[in-house]
Amino acid sequence: MGFACLVNTTRVYGTKMWKYWCKAIGTKAYNDDRKADTVAIIRSFWVVLHIFTCFTIILNAIANHGWGLLGLI
Image (cartoon, rainbow, N blue to C red):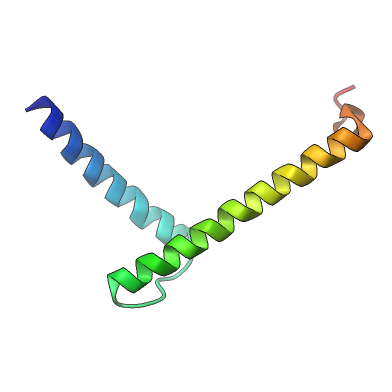
């Protein structure tokens, strides 16, 4: 019973979080859930790509200009 309950809880929680994430990245693109999920996955990739790009830009600035750039030294 313990493992089955955990799997069910994770599935429900994951489904809720997926719905919240989809709402956060934009409106539903299609009425069909399968197509809408595909668009949400592409949008998620785009968000992760932007976060990664910003992170590498910040690391490059620190590497070239030092921590003083952030006012830490």
